Every structure is written in structure tokens, then in C-alpha cells.
Length: 104
Image (cartoon, rainbow, N blue to C red):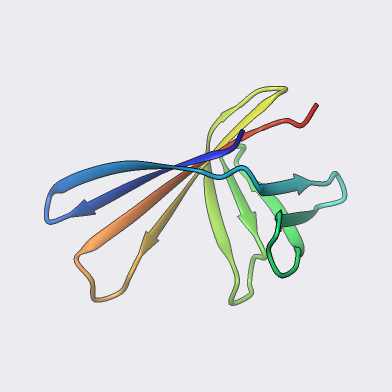
């Protein structure tokens, strides 16, 4: 099962919720490419990934689709990635923590 913790920070207040996400998959390939797919979604996404300092995964560096994820935990069967979304001009920050488990 995959799930996402959503943490909303607004004016010093924090609210946390959780979304069960059974159909979100990402595969990081050894050649520096990735495949991201949401079951039932319109299409799969592909691109390049890079590990920065062993603590951050950067997808599609140098493009308008660039995203950076902080590695929270990684084991042979689990990957937790944190993504911060800050809207310019807004007073809130959304933090998404994606929890992936390896398919058997």
C-alpha cells in the first residue's frame, strides 16, 4: 500500500491528514531515468533523476517540471520521500510525504 501524509502549515498552525494512494508507482532505474505511473491515470511520466548528496532526489533537473524530494527513509522494501509545495504570494506551505513499499 502507498499512502501520502499531507501537512499544511498556515500562519503557524499545522494540520495533518493522510491519503491512501494505492495506484501511484515510481521506478528509479540505474541508468538515471525514472517511470512514474498512476494506475487508471491518463499516461505514465518518464524523465531523468539524480541523487544529490545522498539525501535529495531531483527529477527533471533544469526543466520546468523539476521537482526535489528529500529522502526521509530508504530500506530494501520501503522509500519515504518528502516534497514541499510553496505557492508564491501565499501564506501556507503544503508538505507531502510519499510512502512507497516495494512490490512483491
